Image (cartoon, rainbow, N blue to C red; front, side, top):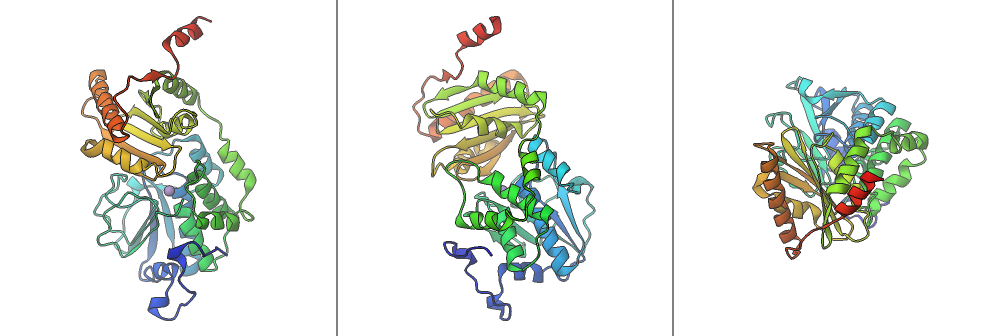
Length: 367
Ligand SMILES: [Mn+2]
């Protein structure tokens, strides 16, 4: 059972009788009783936290209410580990563009919030519920049930709580997805994890298939991954405690996040940023290695009205639609973003220092 101390928003008693004593998971399920089917949606390029949350809640609804459910995929899943998760766990995802939204369908959004620019399905789709842990505020008007806990490291933690609260048996596949979902969200250091995340991990660990998790975590990588990493290293500049890398074009949109996951390990910087063109957008990703980094807030400030951005304290992402992909237009945008980033981090307009000096790059080519 989940520990409940140190977690102010889960201190509700186990009362089911009075309306005030209803737990959140009771209210979530109660409101679904009048619907015929429950459809789960998440953000574009769903990550393990999205996938695990949809799977866990679908299981809860099926076992407690006996209603049919659907889990969906918005956009592509391209990161090798995330693809492996879908394949190995045989997740049956319906592409969101192929959905027929029925009048008596309940739509539940996980790991994201409405009108944050992270969805391709129409805004007219009415949501029954939103369960999320992002700092990025969405437009929750008209949503019947909301449970937003930015203190949680993962939405999967919230879903695990619901399953435990309801005493629902957690099958191996669901536990594996939830465990991996939490793990991927809290791997950085300092950890963006609460005692609730650790309690969920402890509850899931004995049930989850650890071999499957190892297989997902060590998914084989395509050639483009290495090409992209090389390009990122060669384009990286250090400005005081910030490193900025550019990859044009990105082989797939999630690669910007993979670059910063790697670059933030560099001992001399506190912030790593990567930007790259994918189709007609500039994809942005940020990581920080310090506490109270406000990465999501900073990226939102940097991007401003140019596009959209959001995330957490130490991890953030965003995108800017491009009116032109001409090299000069992209260069202009890159220098504007650099200027804004240095300003946001109060770094004097220093001359950037290459991570790999040009001389060394040339020497490497000759050897
Ligand atoms: Mn998440």
